[in-house]
Length: 625
Image 1 (cartoon, rainbow, N blue to C red):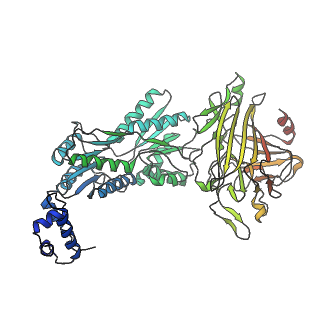
Image 2 (tube, rainbow, N blue to C red; image 1 turned 120 degrees about the vertical axis):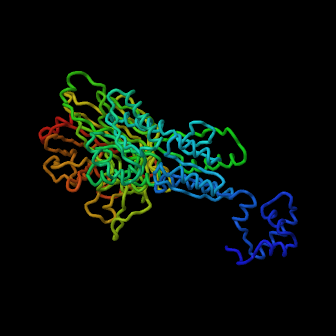
Image 3 (cartoon, rainbow, N blue to C red; image 1 turned 30 degrees about the horizontal axis):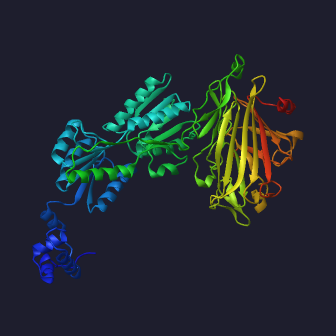
């Protein structure tokens, strides 16, 4: 609230019965003023709505209680969060912050820094781009100063540092673990020392990993720079891109989506900083998290300690943390001839990938990846899934979060409703209303996973949207090479147990959506032209209650998948071949399935995966092989 116009310190002094100097000392908390006098002065000031002049107060104290913060680019959300950290810490100590933006121009930084310091008590330089000699000149002229993401060569200046070199190494090594051998780095501003540190670290990764190539492409720091990088990225032949920051990654991601490049199936993309928007992109962006607001808070804390006379403060260092989301995945497999596998026995087994996934590998190539801890929005009903999944010749057969139906992920166990909770994702069909986005999405959380040769086992709990457990599941995935190495077989077995009470499993058919009895082990196939489906007896595949179903694709890279139901009773097949390709046995097609507490439901599916087009005459032999 503004003070009363025309009220001066002399007016307060007359009302309080003290001198103007005593009023000044009392309002500034001087120790020579007694508590009784200070209270009397503050009461008089309040009665008159007196607000002290900041200019006069600064002249009196020799302090402005303002600090300057110079940043290279305030449009970058990373620097906005650093500013937020400084602001919060400053406000708690009664300071204000004067913010200056150099707009990524190193030639203006020295002038701006010196001018800002003249108006304030101290200076925070955030990621300065200026040369080392120029920085030395500025530090000499502007003490006290704290540096963020920069160290003074002569030492003696407090610094808060992010170890970007180690961060980009961790990210590159993760991509190499996923099979990527051609990496591309979209470099940041030329004057950025953190960019130079990242390039140096990537060159070391390249030297230490024979067969790995890292291309560095000049880019910049803005979303427009990332958008403009589409051409060089596509021309590079890289399978994975590391962007200097998340903003660049967003610009590139938008253009990749426009160009029809699938992320991460065709190209993996990762950023840096983990700005708040990173988790909301499509797909969510993998990035290296930096403690942004904490950098600002600690920079101000260091500055106040300097103002209080502290010397020889340590350099504070942070290592970025990998936040793996949906924008990176296995490197695309190159086509290999299946006959090459006949020449020598090949190692064939599941391998644990830390605690987030398992991969099925044959002779060093990945046939399938099982995502145990997937990063999905809640509205997708998070659940483990298989993706990517390949034929022996490397033809991809799964899609994850495709543009049409983002909630569908590879091969997974997805059920539309269990006691009203969606384990399918997306919208729920409401009778007489239609599809509605409801806050009813559950999740499947795995634990006690183990791999032993060609078998993967896992126990899961199905949690409702409120966290309550509705089902417990024992899942077994078994792989087998066919005897002639012409293909491979995947067996999925799941035993569901209702716990702790009764559950009812339903499909949209139960709420009035005709011909929509889907739900169960569900396979979302990769997009492909000319996919056909047939069943025993030539019945219409969708809704057919037959033991097996075949999907096949003609073309330069033909494939077939023979699906066989496993269970005490046959259920109809849910098949889609129009806008997209998907299939699976629909366990609640005819109506709800009720399980009493402790009651089990066994569900299973066998898949024979081949690099050729099969005919109806082939099916029985393949199922028995």
